[in-house]
Length: 313
Image (cartoon, rainbow, N blue to C red; front, side):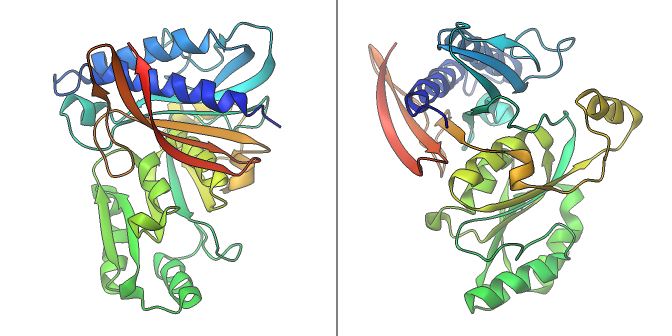
């Protein structure tokens, strides 16, 4: 089991990365905002007592100078850990100073996080309290919605589904409209979208759609901490993506991944708001410190906490 002390360490890593990128919000430069978060996160991860390895990062070694897949981080004298990061989930949101940009990190013991290639992934997620396998990627949208409605003893028109607003989701949207199901569109940041399904305050019954596979692993880590359900399946659309997946040891390109395939054993998940959002407030800067709102989760310890922390600049 992961040491609970790590939860605080990694929460501060996320908060400082969020602060670094927040200095560039509204500046119109998403690359600079992302780089600021990457630099901060890498610097802080190297101070933690661990033998850490990036399994979800900024890309492969030849395309990312820092936080690349396989990069070793930490002081080298602690636990062997797998680390998944998205230093800035919502680069465009930050550049335009729009809501819901966050800095994200998930950590497990060695070998316990799926090494997902930088491709798309089909995803479906619900929160806690449902029977196992009530949802499934192989079910139609209608069947998934009707199963949830039946379990909750409500109409399909009483349910809300969250998904990215993308042309590729036209068929899903048509199915939801036929059932008169409410739709909550998000413009970017589908880690946040998946988390909505686990928190009553957002009134989201299901998250569905196609988004980034690395973000799928991060979302699965969070959902495991909430005791929710998640399934993912890679969307491989060309030879280059096939090679990327093969490089990471994936041979079954149509495999349906269940939550425990993607995140085995214990996991820690930390997210900090960059711009103001529904899930987390953005960074607030005062003279000598900044205030960060952080979501900290630890699956085995059943820790779910959202709090604000003042941190010296």
